[in-house]
Image (tube, rainbow, N blue to C red; front, side):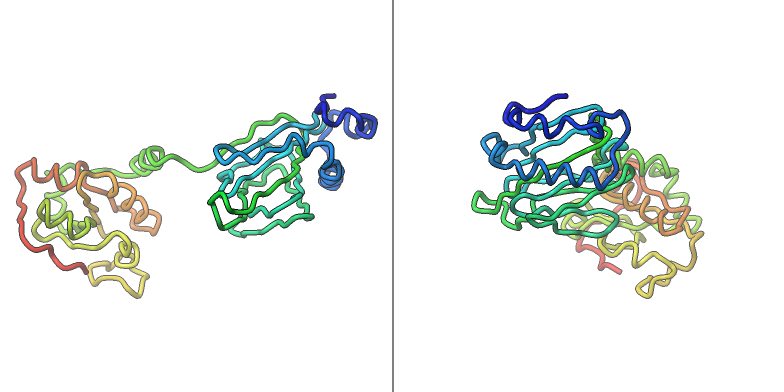
Length: 287
């Protein structure tokens, strides 16, 4: 058993059978241990830090069935959505408050409260203080996990991963292919902002729909749809400046059921470089 040197004087209280078994502990026992360690504040308090540059954590206890950590949360600090590698977990808040977001529900855990979660639980946790400045409130918590030493696994993606994932679902069109598709009835949708269209130019006949309303305008089930959004089999080609934002937007249209939605590879700049028609002047009004 590992015990932080600050807790050596109470080693005997943790030398009990359930904490040294190889089996995972149940949620109730995890909560009890977290509260027990929290009650030893006079011993671990000298270890605690609230570092504004990095979240503080220090292991206090490790046995065959459980590990217990001390965490210090400076204002504005948090951990993005993650799971605990299949471990059961529990935490109790000693001071301040923590905001937990899980399964679409946000819960504020205040000082003195304790909660637990199962092995498939995914959540994000952050200092609940709304003031990220040095004058904001700090938070301190004790966390217990069983089995111990399982990896923290982060969920979500970087923007490059999201882009690759989006493009893996699309049959992207080059400028010539896009022009042929438009001639055959596809909708070419320009999502660039007015300032960018004014600076770069436009493609004659393209529908201009700003990105923030794209889904509402093109979903055939939306009350705010445009007349051209007449069915889920309509081919839509989304265009931006260079073909990055358009890929993410087209994937979002796929999610709505517009299974033929795709984007213009290389965007307006590729279209122009291919010698296809463009015009300049005042931007076309949005629809």
